Length: 460
Image 1 (cartoon, rainbow, N blue to C red):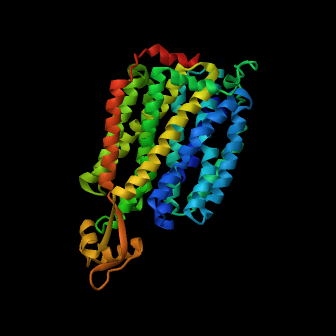
Image 2: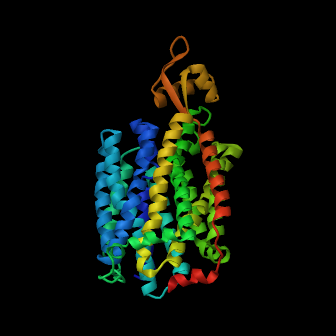
Image 3: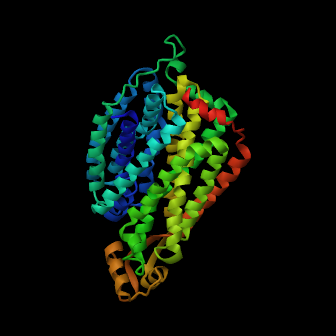
């Protein structure tokens, strides 16, 4: 089997084991367990907490002591085992704890997968900038396939999504051991200062104004990266609360609609070499930020039919540029602008800022803000039915009230229990404004002169 195909399988499985549950976990949390939004923000933040320290630690180990593919293998097998345990959590706190352990095993494998691919490609004289994106695109395809399997198998709100991911993760851990060896570079002298031996020299990158700004904006944009992963599927699913949309394809197959985002990724990943060489990192990242504005803005006015459906689909299409132009280009930028002695550590640092501090910030603030400012509480049938664009005597409304909210209408028109509904339009508009402000500051503050030769240097 040729090397590119083997790395393609690695990439496919790497994101399959994440896509099996990442987009649909909200349906399990809100729809099956009926747990609160603030707590959900905290659980989604476990990815960020793990990314603060685990990618950096594993990057240091891969730079200094243990083959990258061996670390990768062990982490995936442990991650798979924990996924089998996760859905048996009895309450939000125990779910949080188990998920945190799972993410400590999974999150560092993203940077490791990149490092393994870069190392194998370079060792075999491939052009990384040219050959890596077509390999990485299969990661996105793996994510899509996992989403479809979860949705079509009827597992988007059940524990089955975690079992699917867990089984494939264990297989991936075994498969990784068949890859070409990626031994530690050991480019740092054993008599060097302790800080250098531990790979902490990567943090010196913050002493460079341009790199410090790059990592700062990576963190701030990272706060937006996971928001649609956390809330996108449940946003579409909750159109089921509206009688006129309850039986729509968007509601029934929300995960498949969301997978258009990942299909878009596959196209934009392939465009990265052209855009990065022609426009440079600043313009590419700026395009990403503006694409996030459109991603959130289109969602804000999207509905499951007519023009509104077109906006939902457009939001999914623009997601490819929003996500890839930041994540993949950022990783390649780090690869081209850091010393080879600390590249694995620097990649871990990039992951720490985006999926670490950024994701924690975004998840916690979003969860808190949604509960406090963007969740409407209804106590009367007339107010709730008006908000859901129907009448209080509509049979479908009464059935939704019973099945989705576990409530009924009292003789005096009040509801038997308080019904809480998220105001998704205001939620997405707030996210869009955040991304727009970020783009403006980035355009003004980040100064970078593009040199196409810098991109080519990644291979040396």
